Length: 219
Image (cartoon, helix red, strand yellow):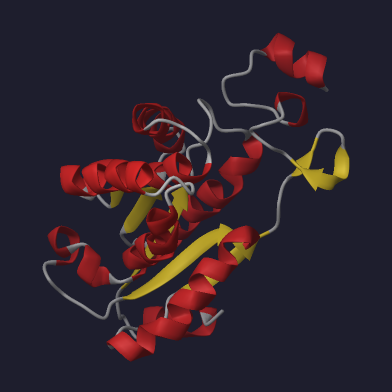
């Protein structure tokens, strides 16, 4: 979606930045999770641009019945796997929602979960906006020195498209450029291409922490 605009901007020496993310639902990532990150690393090398990586530990607290402590722990462990991909340390910002949005947001989520026993209902309504916000450079004044309207390119898995279709619809209404998107399909499970690798099914996936013996046994 709008990749031609990104290429036109690059040819005209206009800046843009990359944004991707990870929902930390397990202690370790599997090889399927790596696909967007490997591709994003290549894009960063080719275009020499800044990158922001959002770890949506708040989302996993809201949907996966994890405590905030466990979700944040998973985020830190997943960050190690992401860092190991070899991104440019001077042009990459990795952040946890629970950490970056501050203690007030954390308190709000916990309070909402107690006041509304229907699975943190208010938090679920607001989360799409949390995922959309990094699409706009104004969310990172410390990176872009307060510059707004810098276009964003989002490499992501296809299941994230609904969030960013919504973001693209809203962007012109708030005076922001639409983020461009590049999608990847799901990596197939070890059982076959009819389904995808899943962190919730260890036998479907090869995790980055698996030993050579475990990998051989699974295959």
